[in-house]
Length: 123
Image (cartoon, rainbow, N blue to C red; front, side, top):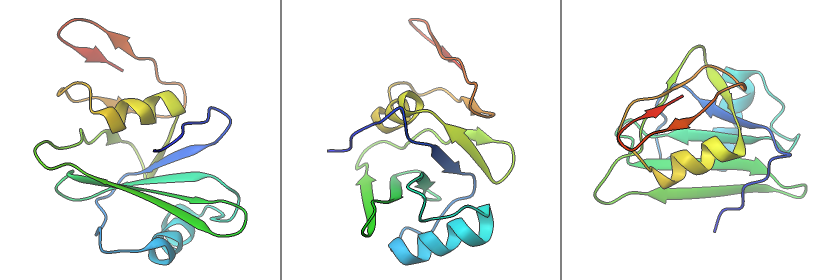
């Protein structure tokens, strides 16, 4: 089970990623494409082109941890991201992982507000 920690920094990678990539290929993508230090303990989130798979990469002090989830019948909602990545809070990641609603939403940075109504989700 994946634990969400509000003290960690989460980054959602904007482009679709080949899910055959392992932890070292994804870590290389983090340093090359995002310009981030992959060894700082930040969490990086990647979605497949079909949005049926998600991978979450984090350096845990002594090695990389890689979490993967594949949906069999549904797809993850692909957030619209301005730029190469967006900062995501732990609650937004939980929302993405649980795939609560099937409506489009946008991450524009770390200050994202979520409003729940019975039929829509506004971010």
